[in-house]
Length: 173
Image 1: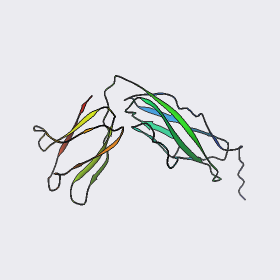
Image 2 (image 1 turned 45 degrees about the vertical axis):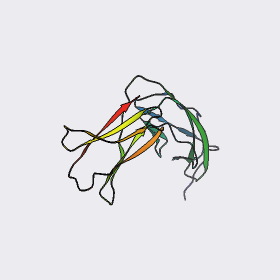
Image 3 (image 1 turned 120 degrees about the vertical axis):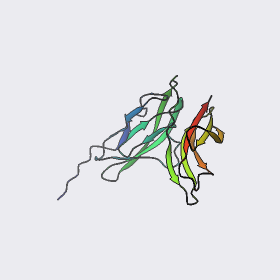
Image 4 (image 1 turned 30 degrees about the vertical axis):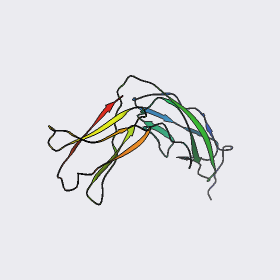
């Protein structure tokens, strides 16, 4: 016999996360009240994204290195152990900083054709040049683009069949 006791209706509090600092590590938990723990968190389908560089873990922790200043609004979903769900719009401000942008490379993959792919957060209003080298002495640009405020996927079209390649990202504001 299993008895589950609900602690009132499920809801999210507060609706505003503590402010983050651009280019500085951030870690803050969302809180669910009521319902029956444990809780599972996700971004509501169709929601605006979290600030660039941040992610939401299933335990409700928002963490990462926010890349761009500004205020974001996104919709989170929480489900409790009794399958009750609710969602809440969350507001979060990232304050501007003079700290240099931290480039974190994600989505590393070797494609079927042997090309190398990765992604970087690309801040709007910032220009990026991806450079490649085989010997760490000579660097060749392979792609230049303007940041869009989203992750930018980069594919090295010349990586197929080479034994090793090194990459740099040049950031220009």
